[in-house]
Image 1 (cartoon, rainbow, N blue to C red):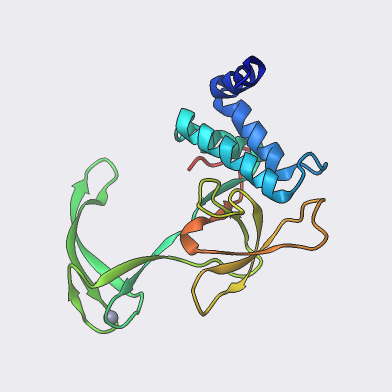
Image 2 (cartoon, rainbow, N blue to C red):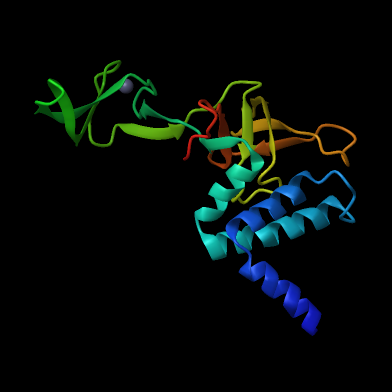
Length: 203
Ligand SMILES: [Zn+2]
């Protein structure tokens, strides 16, 4: 590589997480035709995303949240009975008296689960799965997801009943003539966290 290329590369390597987050956000949302194609834009975004993750670990997605001005978190999980698929499941636990608060508080979780619907009982009767958000809920494809539209925001359209996951209507970029629809798996989707008290919740 020529010296000037090395210098640019060194600048990017030394950039703090905020700078890289700004760069990634501007790549993903830039309205001017700075890139020759969306493929070129995505390829550059992949480089910045990988660098941010490599250099700054979890500080990078946090910085990206702050820059993007919206906070997203992984989908809430639900537990299901693996026998009847019902979601009315309880789990054995121990409680300890909390003298300060004057109430019992959870001290520990035990392995046994019981399904209140079919009565199945044991340590292996539950499965965890992501709870799919409803239509029109604001979501994001996780910035670090292995997905061509990682980092893009949009709203839920409808579930894909054949292979699972959700169709999302992505926020339109100026370069896109029509709204783009993407299919993403539940574990790639993050849900918007409404901000209260003027400060984003950290996740
Ligand atoms: Zn059951």
